[in-house]
Image (tube, rainbow, N blue to C red; front, side, top):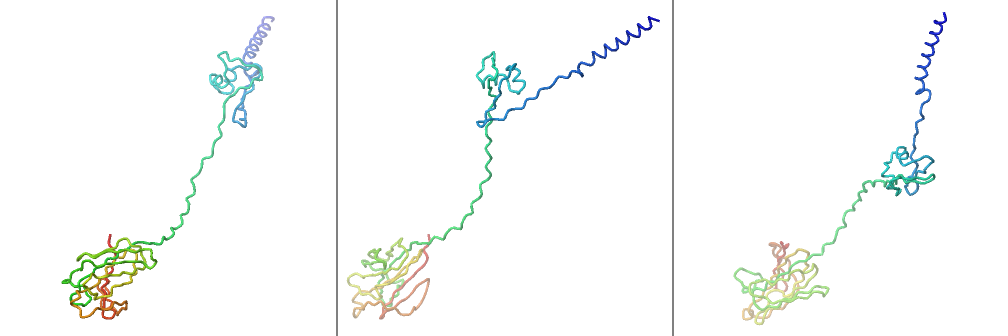
Length: 258
């Protein structure tokens, strides 16, 4: 009877010991430490204050910062000696600059129209009006030695030239405006057209004005010069025929081509 009781008691002790050996892991759980990164200061520096029992290894494991980096940031030697209350630099947070969005596209105002003040050209042809009809004909040639004068109404431009045979005497790059053209035939010639002509020159105009004169022996009397005009007798390519007391002028005007 005693043996049975002893055996039962031994079994109970053995079972209890096994149960006790299995309980420590669940009965005494290890508390897991969590580290919350400190808020950076105004200068962006993250500081850790050393506590009792801290080491570079424990701080590295706690904060996730490599030991070598921790040493470099805080000028620590290989032994990494720390003292309680010591402030360790863990890193510097740089302020994130906001990304600038696209600049608004400025609204372009329509360009202000620029007034065009261009130039034109005036050419003069003094021809030998053999038949005295004030018309430059193919059989009639130019007169050498005539004097040409061009002036504007403001008195700012005054140019002169002499006629050369059948060639046109041209005045280039004249500012647009109001001009007066005067021609004096050489000695021995009497005018068969008016020798003065007012002209409005616009930008891009290419104006040709024909003045006629004939040898004095072919005229019975000097012809008085006048500025009076008669109605236009014909137009061909911008040609005008003006007359004053029997005198006329042959005028051609066109846009100058580049």
